[in-house]
Structure formats: structure tokens, C-alpha cells
Amino acid sequence: MELQVGDRFSDEAGEWEVVGRPHTAAGGKIAHARVQRVDHPVTFDVRSWSANERISVRRATTEEGKAVMRLARRTALLVALSLLTSAATARAECA
Image (cartoon, rainbow, N blue to C red; front, side):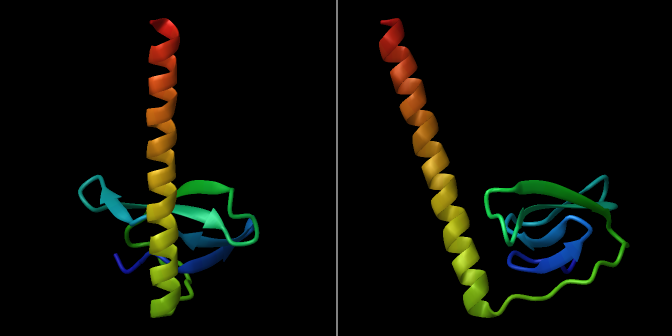
């Protein structure tokens, strides 16, 4: 699979950017990638393709790819901290 973080593609819903590391399932026959809308970054989706299906992508430059990875790491960290805070608050309320 040649799809990489930072790649962009378009479909009937708009332009999308791969923000999660692509992976395969079903013995490598199905490819999955977490994507977000370029014009509306809060819109996420997980897209799936047959591994032999061709999609037309625009490859990000090295700097764009690094920026996307930094954003993905920062987002994951914020989500983890939010979940920990929620759990601590819920536990404190039960005590």
C-alpha cells in the first residue's frame, strides 16, 4: 500500500487528507486510513478501499507531512489528557 500520512484525495464529499497511519486488514486485502476534510478539519472519517483499488492522491511535501504528524500527536495527547481528567472527576464525584 502506497498511501501515506499527509496524502490528499478528492471525492464527491470534498477534499480529504490522510491523518492516521494507513493499515491493512483481511490478510492485506482491505486498506483503512483515518482522514479529515481539508476545508473542515473537525470532520474525521475512516475510509476503506480494496487493497488493489487505485485512488488518485496528491503527495504532501516533507514539511507538510511533518506538520500533520505533529498535529496528530498533539491531538492524541489532548484526547488522552481529557479522558484522564474525566475519569478522575468521575471518581472524585463517586467518593
